[in-house]
Image 1 (cartoon, helix red, strand yellow):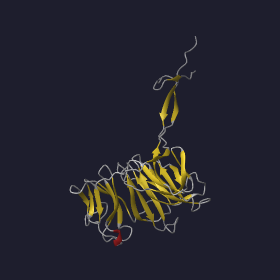
Image 2 (cartoon, rainbow, N blue to C red):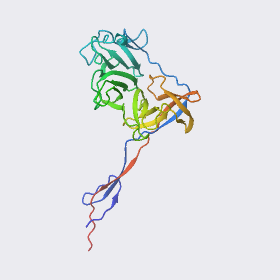
Image 3 (tube, rainbow, N blue to C red):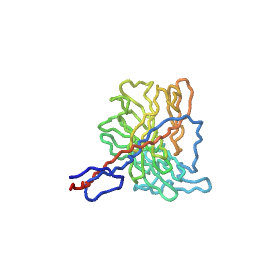
Image 4 (cartoon, one colour):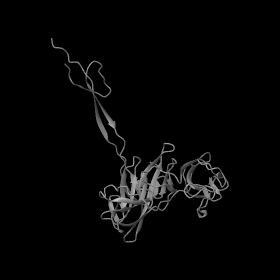
Length: 321
């Protein structure tokens, strides 16, 4: 015969059954709100990106990390003009406070697609993030002929866009947004064409999403188009944030009031990111139907859930005499 008894956490009885109770915190579920901010002053990190090369540091004390004819890490080629000479050799770059740079580079003599890639570098290293002309692993999507960097945070995590050619799912091509993370060589899909838009109806989907911005908590904000029942030219633009677990939250939408600091700020007509070279937070600008414009910040408000875990063990009941 056995009694069931409850014991404090960590108390274990070796000769029977008891319960050990533990409060186990689950991973935080990020929540977000919007607050109005004054005109934000974005930091400028010293460096240079141009067809003559990529360098980090102020003029007179910079370190060149890539230049034309240099071997391009992760490939068997060198930096140079690709198929389209108008693209130049180096472009589309961003610097961060840690002295890193992400940039789009082109490769000498390669055809469209494989002639480009995204590299992440510092004064001591340079590595390929992703190369154009590759299959990014999306079922039904075509080859990502273009890869375009959009932002980088202080940890060197990067958001980039894939522009896909024709595939079974989208004969006219498609787009995707990706973010790199702590795991070397790993990238997480943030958004792809025709993915469901959560909370807007079963048949409302994303039509595009390219410009993206990452903060130091690895939250990624992006502006995306919408299509489906009830969607018109007056309400088809939207601003979302994806937390590090990939959960999407709608922040603002064209044709709807923007809620900032708990109050409606006006009906949104245009959403945009003015500047993508700031890793500290997610800032955006909204223009309203009365033609006023204001700047806002996305404020993460992490919360956590706790569960009660009951562990059982046997405790012998004393025999009656």
